[in-house]
Length: 372
Image (tube, rainbow, N blue to C red):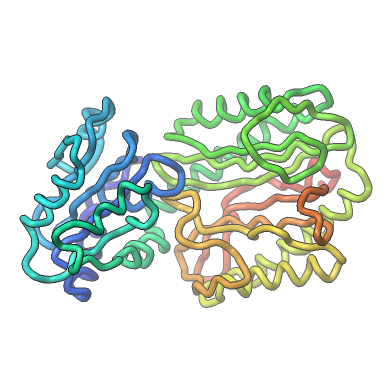
């Protein structure tokens, strides 16, 4: 289930074709071993960063080199990744300068994801080639947003794992259960199914949408168990945000759930290639507002090698959807001007197809609310 060498070669060729168009001698790619800034690095190396900040010099011609501070995980990275040249050093920026100079032919040098780094990453701006540096992150945005079949298959697996988590914890949504107990079961299922990592946040305080890591809250009757389930299988995320009623569902929450169902159905009806992301958002928000409620958070985001893969589903996002893109739609329903009040936050992962959108999750989030 690893990404094939054929796909690696396709990626490298596509990257270099865009580099030629931009007159780039090399790329300097940034990676951090978290849920949000690891994707660009993994796209060219086939392994996730695990030792803090790392950089990859990707030349127009020649082998890429990974530059890292000393970390215990590097021997394993060498075995599973595509990069054969490593430079382990305590002075990242001196080594970056040395490697860039090997490939510099007077053209520009593209940086990828540098603006996402911590403060030390901005020292790159003081490199001798700073007048040649240009932001080339859009190269990766173009290539990564549309997934290849191998990537889609892994996202399908992640979605199926999220389904297993939902089915596995639904019976735990009972008064007296701690959010720690639920969270432990979520992680147990995810890692037992072979995931690299997962990003899962939970809320067991009443029926609010204050998702965070567990804090010791105890489920009470009339509340909801709300979790963003985000497994990462072989580097690729899917997401299933759920809200499960505890000991019966209050009338006001049932009304919110009904509005949520109408909103996501409307969103999916326009979720297709050629449609702008903001149009999907505005369609769902229109339904929610029509019923007297508000959508006070983003309504989803693209996902893949990063949990948020370049864009969020908002009223201002003008990215045009294309066949092969993957994203989670999670419209949220609250009373207007009530971010701290009760709310419903749920959704599914979708694949944009030639004819519309395919829901990759197979569960029905309405079932716990009594809709069979």
